[in-house]
Image (cartoon, rainbow, N blue to C red; front, side, top):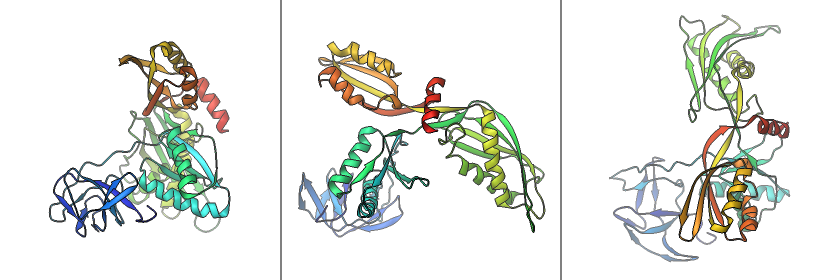
Length: 373
């Protein structure tokens, strides 16, 4: 707010909140002072001294509280279940048009990200571009629009990119020896890894099964770190690798030349060498799509969803309208809002949310690899 500064909206579940009192943030484990307390009516506001259970008020001046935190009485602490925010499924590259825009863009994006935990920010080290990651095309369009409208930041915006992932489909073993001698002390590390697929949603799991000290305990974290640093750049098309387990089963070391760094380098090389043997595949985000349409456009809607590699999972009635539920790859949904409007004379509407990752058909995977290359 240009007059009050940062506002934190809270809902009171029990008790009374008083202006000037202290509250405990049980998520961040720190104490905050409640300064001004405002009752909001659209863009007008009214100062209040007390708020009661059921009220929604805005607090000015909270420094460390973010979306999803629990605030409570210092002497009666409680923590409510945290909100889970799904992983982003789409990304967009933005770069400021001028140096002045660059400074403003940093401030704008940090504020927008603090408001919206489903927005993630990163930097492409090669191009220097800022990457916005979010829940859909419309989500990122709104972020870019707010950046221009509220913060007066002019930026060049790239085409949206789908957040593909990679995984493996069969178990394999890889042995790798890292050896380097260039005067003075060298580098030596030998490892043997078992790599195997895990069920969807498992992420990356590392296990150490070394017995007998063939790899000393102090070097094992180097192996794990090397593998973790390789996850973001998969072997199929450079997308993050998920849902697999790597087990350190054997190895050897040198009394002088071995180090944590040598084992980290060996693990990275073993990842690049071992993953192609494990039948790696590309995964794409599948969206749960709901289209509400007048009956006369049902056939066109279903035909269009099928042409986008969608699978209709159900049909229902809602008043005079028909509802079509489908699972559709996100990569096929770009520009869908315009297609739906023209198909239904503006009378149909849709919503979508991320559901799961699924293996990309081989012909589509080849197209994606060519684009990335």
